[in-house]
Length: 86
Image (tube, helix red, strand yellow):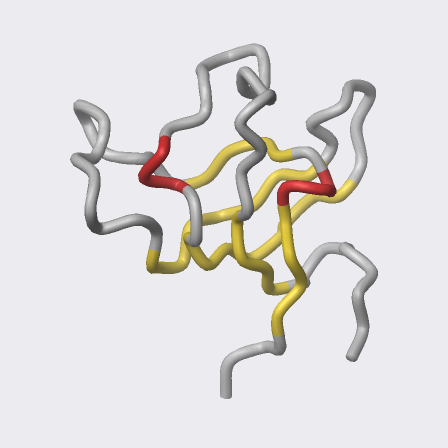
């Protein structure tokens, strides 16, 4: 299986407790476990990967006000590459 994160990669979010977020907004517990599709995998800070939410996430915690949004920036080590869905 390919474990390189590039545009088009499917991944599962695996948040790290010590990460405050991408500088724009903090990570939310509901993101953990979400399935995402990477759209951009470069940048000039530590959250270099932008991914769109495609489902999942924690269902045992309330979502933030307004929901999770369409996507957000992640550090590469916050994403676990998964096979592309059929």
